[in-house]
Image (cartoon, rainbow, N blue to C red; front, side):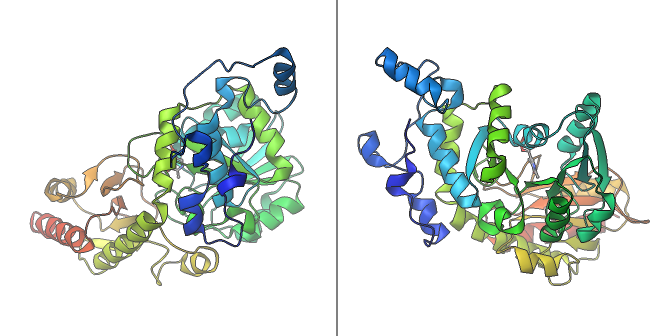
Amino acid sequence: MKSISHVTTPDSREDPCTFLVHGGRDPQRFAGLVNTPVHRGSTILAPDLETWRERSAGEPFGTYGRFGNPTTRSLEETVAHLEGGYRSIIFPSGLAACCHSLLAFLEGGDHVLMPRSVYGPVRAFTQRVLGRFAIEVEFYDPLAGGNIRDLMRSNTRVVYVESPGSWTFEVQDIPAIAEEAHAGGAIVVMDNSWASPLYFKPFEHGVDVSVQAATKYLVGHSDALLGVATARESVWPQLQHGAHDLGQTAGPDDLYLALRGIRTLDVRLRRHWENGVMLAESLLDQPLVKRVLHPALPQDPGHIIWRRDFTGASGLFGVELHQMDDKVLRALFSRLKLFGIGLSWGGFESLILPYDKPAPGKDGGPLLRIHAGLESASDLIADMNEALAFAAASA
Ligand SMILES: *Cc1c(COP(=O)(O)O)cnc(C)c1O
């Protein structure tokens, strides 16, 4: 099956916003329809034996549904272009994409460096699964920067980065880490879900494989689970073959929802960014709040690197509260009307969750993660102020 992007993909000088609208589409190929339709199918028939042989000898695409169809290709090509990588491959969830991007490059006896701030389920995978295959997993300080050099060993194959870190929002010096990783013969795998491919260009900063939990901002509407991994050309074959060996694939309806979400990624993200910063700023002088963890705030420890390497911020940030009785926290949650209590983020709606594990710091209080949705910022701030005042009064 031929690549479809050559018809409508604008050239690389084009602004990403324009690409979001036009990329990965080819209406004339699909009866003039603006959107690439949902393609269903496992069996793909060849017209004759010669064609079958020809298809089987080349790329697996177009030989069987598991390797994808035009809906899959459309999403893969769109994400690859946005991330600035060579090619992308789809996974049924963000977690599957993260885990596979490690597994594809590791074997028994290897050493892998994972940031302590890594997304919890990925941490669990490295410990429970990689550990069983005699792969040595070592956790490092996400702020190590170029000092990662001291942890590199002759058998270090992968240095994993996630910036900012899940829950704790440390901004990593990825170019410095990548330089040392490459000098030591390792590749860099990044979880780039927070910034999305719009606000962080992984391949310009030394990353070799970039993962999107597409469930978050690419889908953008909390109605599908999906992951995408994108690679540089040099590591693409290893990433792709490994995924095929494990039978990684995703359903066409979910692929369609991601493609549809991507068209509005720029306008949604601008609002998430603005709402997140306004809400974070409003929390700074709240008496119950000890610290706001948001790299776009000038006082944040990660701000300088964020400004250097990122072109925007998403709506996800953290808040550390002062130590408090659990009844105060319960009062706060009971009063919030616009913030749902639930996992995930990146949809249009606002969310809040406590971080159950011990917060960093000696006298740390509860840690909260907030996703600023697309509501009006003043409504979100008013709702939060009201709930915080109610909670403070219940102390
Ligand atoms: C949610 C999330 C994932 C996993 O995505 P799923 O689609 O839920 O499996 C990976 N990384 C980060 C940073 C996430 O927030």
